[in-house]
Image (cartoon, rainbow, N blue to C red; front, side):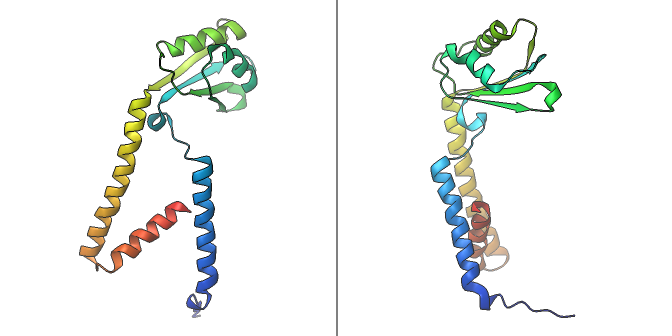
Length: 171
């Protein structure tokens, strides 16, 4: 059974859907921004396991005296494990940030009721530099793809292939 779908006949609606999807994606990027990890943003990420049931709001209130600014508190793992990840942007003076957070949480929830499982710290300057290098690497890879596709197949195909790749990533 041979079936031919007339793609060219429907190119206008397909193009419209594609443009709308790209516009929606770009709108989200420019309004919400990227959700960079600690490596690219700079900051600290600490993962705790609690022995008792605690809410994210309780943890936020316990840490409010430290004046850390905006922080992200996310529950992860199974509900029985009581594991929370705390992500904060590093202040200028961030010596012993993990110890400060642990002390504040132990003060609120009791000593021995929590355990610091993991701590990652990246300075803001390093995060900014990594983000810049990542964008340059992406641009460099696009140029290399243009060269390879042009050499291997035809130089007329290269821009279309790379633009299609960028389109797919945007959506």
